[in-house]
Length: 126
Length: 370
Image 1 (cartoon, rainbow over the protein chains, first blue to last red):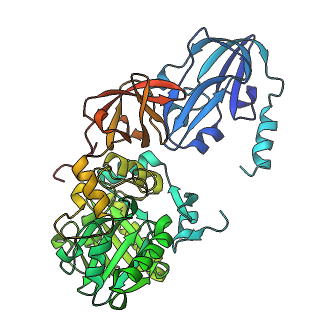
Image 2: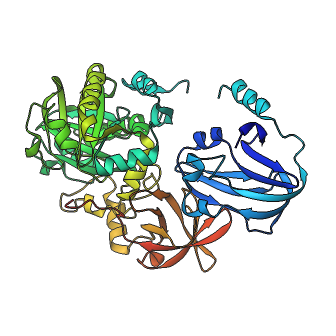
Image 3: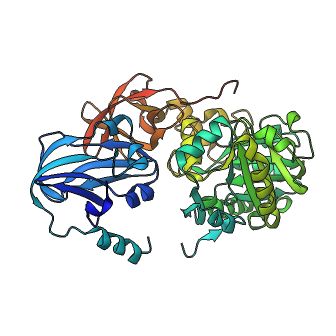
């Protein structure tokens, strides 16, 4: 996947939007900052989400971090492989480490392009 | 990280790409390659830790041993030169000031190795106890922490790795004994102790020589799979081994008996600070106990999460997380004594939701032959 197709949130999630569907995961920066991921909690398929709702939880050795929904819509698929292999989030955050697929009616209005996201990281000295 | 102390190895950690963070007033390496990888290296081969943040306090003088008998739960009079002992230091309430190692360097010279975050408090407490003990003139207290570096080499291959660097024969060094020798040509005190549940050594060095020793050990250990390991792995290793961490399983409000550390209390030696409170608890039983917890449904138990049974809160998690060597989510915590039986099905409240768990035996991990 070419990363430049992706959109990003300020909370270090990525979205790959195709029509009214969006696949969501966490960015490489996020997995790196978390360290070894040892546990992932995912929503139930069919669940309705508002923008900013807790979509899932990613736990590293150190701490638990919420992942927020970057869109309003319904969960249509989750990556069950993460339940038994949370390390996929470290190994391949944009590929096998995807988390959730949403059928959305509205995207967050403040999504970033890749350039904008990387610029933000650079600005924050990350 | 301003205002934090740096160990003699600080620059090396940064140069090696370690992730640094504050711990107990010090800036310490949390991880190098990654916590899981470092954890597994220690269980399967060896790891080297910078633990120079620990405090070293010399208690010397004619009355050093009688004095320590009064302020510690163990009996340092039972130690011979070259022996070390784990002990607790208690308040009158029975609550724990600190947990520590006592090294008998000589009949009138002992070293206490204490937690970094507690060192100043410990010194204050020990000096106050000295004043009231009546042993005052025969006891001298010296803080040698600033001049002392400490590295721990832990794991099944640690003896093999250090053998080539150590002047004395490590084979003869039994657990909880130590000797003064040279490591990589540098003066060192080497003890067969650690905080990982593995065989291993702790090497006390002059602060100014610690970096040279570290570099030599790292180099010598490479062929055997030794890796530098941070405080992250140190924490998962000690959790698996069921070892308490001050500030989690131990505190001024928790007694050694509640913490399941009664075997480190010498009841035959006579009076010591905290004895009355502990005697009372021994007679009447404790109200709460430290237990091991294993998750039976999906979730990670973490410090501070409540524990419940039948909808009622019965305790709290003090440490917990993913345990790599057991591939399980495990924790330690305090529960009401009547709920502390192994096999009891309880719940950990995770983000407001009760998740099934079971009380299990401690330690979770015991090394083969250990």
